[in-house]
Image (tube, rainbow, N blue to C red; front, side, top):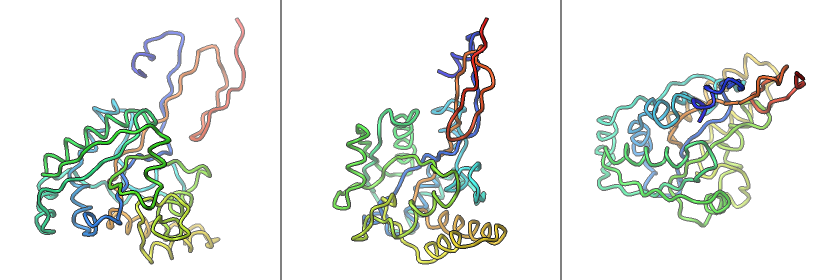
Length: 265
């Protein structure tokens, strides 16, 4: 649609990096994903460049961190390379054959979310994993993936920090306080990821007044999360804003757009 709108002489189409990450969460309560090699295999099976170029039409970049590059605290820990042979090797080492998983996805919540899920399904099939894609209306999807008694396995979702900083990615999504397996867990750590060192680092970030020290904590925690692979890391979509050419003085920000005035002819 953006490419079509660019052809309209009355419109300005502004494409900028975004703060949202799109990922597939992994429910670590499931015995299927207890072995870290299985979770890493899921990541090696995904061709993120193809997702960005074909499914997202070039309007996304592969995730190289749980944080978007625009988010303070971001550290590029590296994209999982597309290596289906490595994925197969890890599955063999883990003793996993004929793995069948469910992939829940919203349909229409995010740009091409369902299409991304179908592409991931095909990529997983190529390494011997059968993924059953389960599309859902957004409200139903949230009820399903926030229910600690539900048997969901993989779930496609996005996250953008409302505060615009890295702690509001790490704390809700990765701290054990927010894991669904905890009796008091009320946050967004749907996959019930728990790592004591990650908890410590997230808490240290919140208390650290020295930004240089905080950046080291950010770096370490992102490295651990990548290694632990509680997600299938996917991509960071661009923000696309369409403005009529008579609208002037537009202030673009990652979390919102403010219009200054409309030029009268």
